[in-house]
Image 1 (cartoon, rainbow, N blue to C red):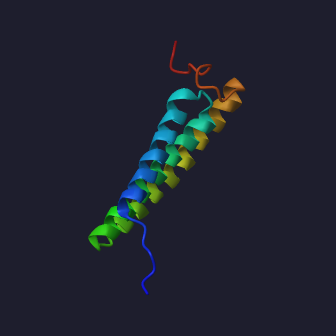
Image 2 (image 1 turned 180 degrees about the vertical axis):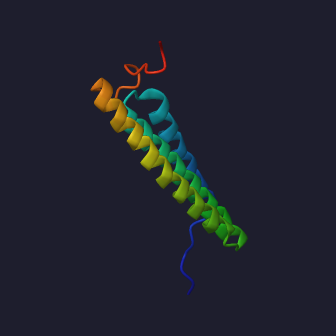
Length: 104
């Protein structure tokens, strides 16, 4: 007896839901850390979609692309958190509304 498999449409629906939650987190919240968490959630949703479609097509391309997305997400975390720490040292807040470093 073969094990039951989850249809690809369920994976894609979950991916869309995760992406929507991440996008709402980025657009609604004003805390820089929560915004970065929303971006990471959107990256993970894209990874899930890539891997699900690659599995459906019987190809490893989705996993390869997901690996590169994870690498890009790790670089985003390093650079983003470095910027957040520098801004916090200067402004004593991580609220993105209070940060106006580019204004004269």
